[in-house]
Image 1 (tube, one colour):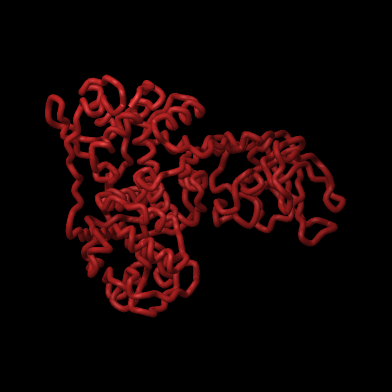
Image 2: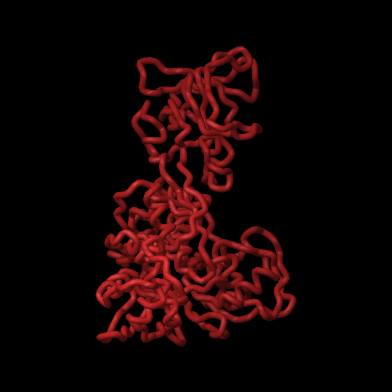
Amino acid sequence: MLVPIEWLNDYIELDVSDEEFCDRMIMSGSNLETCEHFCEEMENVVVGKIEKIEKHPNADKLVVCHLNVGGEENIQIVTGAPNVFEGAYVPVALHKSRIPGPLHGQPKQEGGVKITKGKLRGVESFGMLCSASELGFEDKVVPVAHKDGIWILEEEYPLGQDFAEALGLKQAVVDFEITPNRPDCLAMVGMAREASATFKKPFKYPDTVIENENGKGESGDYLSVEIKNPESCKRYVARVVTDVKVEQSPWWLQKRLMYAGMRPINNIVDITNFVMLEYGQPIHAFDINQVKGRKIIVENAAEGEKFTTLDENERTLTKDMLLIKDAERGIAIAGVMGGLNSEIEADTTTIIIESANFSGDSVRATSKKLTLRTEASARFEKGIDPNLCEAAADRVCRLIELIGAGKVCKGSVDVYPAPEKAKTTDIRVDRINKVLGIELTRENMEEILKGLEIKVEGSGNIMTVTPPTIRQDLLEEEDYIEEVARIFGYDKLPVTLP
């Protein structure tokens, strides 16, 4: 789980160094793989504007760009990028600059790549226009809009400003290894909750309040939902958004996704991916015009049924695979991948937001048989709290509202046959102290448990505890002893004989 520190600060204000953050998270039980600092090898790369483009006199595939980089005179740079145009704001590596690299067709160099002026086919070039990959981003996270050329900025920035500073590129990303018993941590909110308990800092949930449900009508006017296999689908929440405008996402949203390891595609898809990373609840969006009969039916596929997924591969399904269907056909493989027949297109105007809970066993078996593993299936396989569905759907709608990507209809269609409830357990103060070899008071233990959003009742030696439903791993007294130990600090536990 890639956790950008800048994103984490949306939920909890951290006032410690990256190194201290990592050390203390390790001591509170988080498994940390790496901490990578992006764009530290970038020097003398600035924001420039292409004022004029001329044909290269000696090469058909090269052009000469004249750029304003904030100085008294423009500079010229020769490039073969196919997507440059006059008026574009771009990253410019000036003479004697350094970029993370790698350059096209070359291996990445330790310490970055030095850029100096030179001649290309007889024409002087005083630097280099950069792609996102040349500035250190992996190809798989480069936004679709400019993955095959120079990084074209969607917004205007002060010319000559340091590029990394202008776009906020220099930041740390921590890679946590999430153990199978903690699926709640496959989410930014989950990791923020852990940090809140570790650093004893207040934790703020994402904004899910939709201010203007001004879409045409109510969600229930547009569709109905039927779950025919409640063992494999515990809950299905659907909301409708009208007047949708499919376009590129604002930079803050694209940046969050890129640093978390996902490629920005368009505003609607980006928001669903953002909320999946934020809450750990996979979201899918359908073009309502492609949903026949305006019905959503959750049931198993027919044996041998053919279905084409979003990656344009036709797949043969079996009768034990759960399918999302409309009145006539399948439109998504539940918990794994949507169908090509209902994807969001540039001309999509009304969408259905799906926030559903599917059985981990069902998704795991389907994913394995189809050899198709996705970010969504990886989360469902580990188990997700069905009580997240409503908040995640509301969060998607709130973000759509905030960036002006559509109008949210009132209400939702929420089918939840058997609401999930947390298991209440009695735990003993003296037992916890005996196992850990410490002498904490009941009040100390209550503070630790409440910091993890665990409800504590009762008095004296017995604490009656109820975890939030996201903590599906807290089932018996030993589980709570571990929680007290890790938040108290493994490094503080004394060495005692058993």
